[in-house]
Amino acid sequence: MQSNSQAGRIDRARFDSARFPFLMEMPVRFEDLDMLGHVNNAAAVAMLQEARVAFHRELELSHFGQGGPRTVVVNMNVEFGAELTYPGVAEIATGILGIGRTSYTFGQLIRQNGQGAVYARVTMVATGETGAIQIPDAVRADFEERCLIGW
Image (cartoon, rainbow, N blue to C red; front, side, top):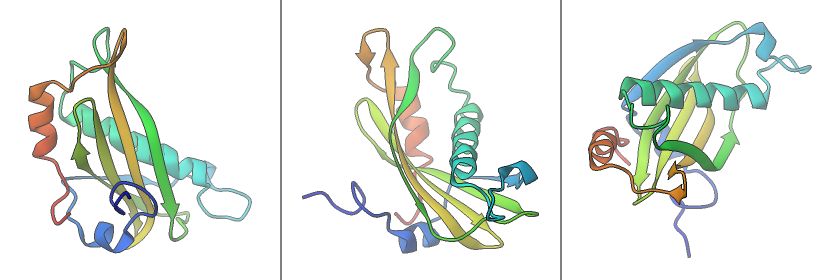
């Protein structure tokens, strides 16, 4: 049986109380809205992706991409707990939940006005030409420093 941290529903209370090592703000754009007047779920997922890209760029993970190993999303669990509205700013909090031999899992939370709105658990796999590859030790060390605090 898998624990809640590995499968099933996201423990929103734990995400709300965790300290995330990487935070970024993103303005909510008018084009992100759906016909109901709130941010479309697909736009929220795109915000999560932008935050993961910024997280990787901050670490200067030059060994991922550009002809070398790269990472791909293999699993994404997203829960929508509240609406994101326009105009406004979304805060996207990102950190590492777990690190395996070839994969690692992000925990992400989008807040607006201090309220948790979107909760995500995203698993990435490091890949090479022939499939999954081991995460380099230097990258593993960087990830270990950026795990969620209080998790």
